[in-house]
Image (cartoon, rainbow, N blue to C red; front, side, top):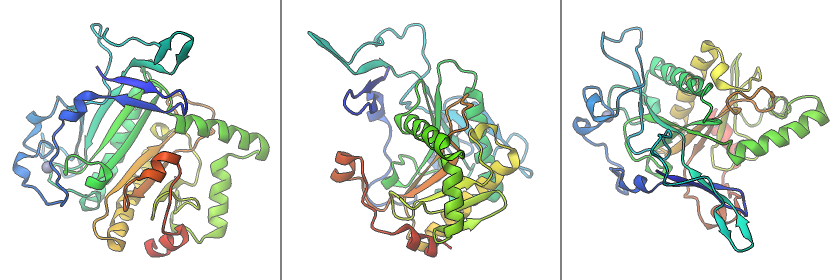
Length: 335
Ligand SMILES: [Zn+2]
């Protein structure tokens, strides 16, 4: 089994997951459209994936067919605990003499793949609106299924689209990695948002939404339910957030209508990104409050980050980012 390790200096966790080195890499430096006949995610090749945990049909889907399908990851970074997992025990990472520091524990968790089309589409922009909606409903259902799991504290839905964004298979898909602890990124925001709430009597996101709305220069789209904008401190060129205007903490509790609109908006945004750039690699992820969290401090949102430059020494060494495109300019082009 894999192992989590928490660095005692930064409190940053890593997964030591050696079996990940064996997963297939179908991309070379140049991305070429592959033949769909040997794609494990295409309809007809269902036997090549682990047994599915969910499938979704559209209004016009033929019987026994599917539009969106969820399967366990064949090469998981984390996995549910089983009684014979005794090779790693929870203990300090460094434990010798007077030094006790860091942690190690079994990499318990859930790692699933959401296959977002039965056809060999490579881009989220190629989906139908209905497939985009069903994908976002699947994200909700997978998170909701974890709500009662005592081993799981946080579930992150994310997409790697394109080799520069970390994708190892071309067929359009997203992933869920669920963890037994709250990631530092989220934990830090919980603390920060609590300070803001006490001081301002409104949540941090309420303040930011009001400021972005008033300013307007970074707004890309606005609907009744959502504000889509390039955040003022974007880490990546064309980084864009899709934020519900009615603040809500946990994505898995959101209404189906709002979730379906989120799917359509993300699809629309990926179309616009591809109009501005030549088939950009990108990541998006669903930033939501921890499972079961009732503090109301974090608001769920979708963060989309095109990957025009590799993370390099400065980013890795400092945890800071250099962004060569002002978000105000990015928003103009995405409008
Ligand atoms: Zn395929």
